[in-house]
Length: 474
Image (cartoon, rainbow, N blue to C red; front, side):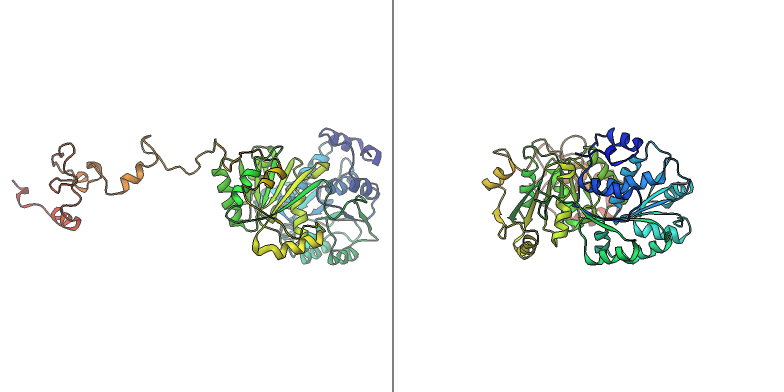
């Protein structure tokens, strides 16, 4: 293995990496860092989870020097907020032994804090296209001295329709600059973009010779499952031997929220990340997941590019992705940094045609997913689920228990709302009537007591109480 010191990386950066146990470089880093340090434009292509961030981040930090002048000197553009946070954390770690300051610029958070960091002289900006253009348009972000420019996950920017925004950003940076473009896939439009805005770039594709389109260290399992049984199957998978952090992908925001509520009710430590949540809530969920306080994360594809957690052992596709590119990015949340992982995909009956296309594109050789239920023996064998496992943990918390009135149980409020027994719910009790209480056991169904429910109709009882009785004066 090649170490970062062997690649010519400065000692302070090597020390920052080694403090976190990062000593050896991955193939994409080994090939791009020696070219990026002297200023060669690079198109880097490698599977997700193979260390692309350090591949472009180390040259950027080292080229700025140990004590750069205040003001934006480097710009890293990413497609999503989650990825902006992840790249910011990596860049901040690389610069911890230097005077260089890093700021994350993305939507969903207040402008003030980001503007203050820019005014304080931050030299490296990591941001999403919309907020970058917004602040640049208000003349709060000056990119005229940004001689280091990086486009990360360029194919995702294409999918999200950010190419016009990228062109606007390139008009605001210097014409003479060092440009790096990194992506897991390289569609034709991205190649065209690179030709327009890069100077004689070198295209580096880091893959192993014996590796297919998917990562060799990820085990792929595909099941044809019934939608009404998926929650039970997932709950049993979450009790498999060796399972640690798990990411579950859903197609819609509503499905994500429904699943997290269901798993929490079953006793699992689950959180969600989807578009209906505020940015603050999404960051709290991600922080709890990274810290290990929660070990199950349910997400829509908006988060697929920003989950950079090394110890994710399982990825579950609750619903099949739309194409093979999305599948690769979902599955790439596990098996990161050289570890092994398992990717499990559920295919609904109506989505078999989608799976046929993905299977053909990724050369899985599984045209017919095996029909699977929560009690199927092959499910237990494939995932090492202990025999007898059920879909609910015994210590499951009662998340939505009814409020208790006096500790007597959760069904007390329901009895109070009905036409109940006892003087506490009688209309004349609230009015201060001094009628004597019936004898024990009487006046309920015999039609002769003040509390009877089947003797005199309710409307007639109300009319009798509406005005003063003739003998009230007496």
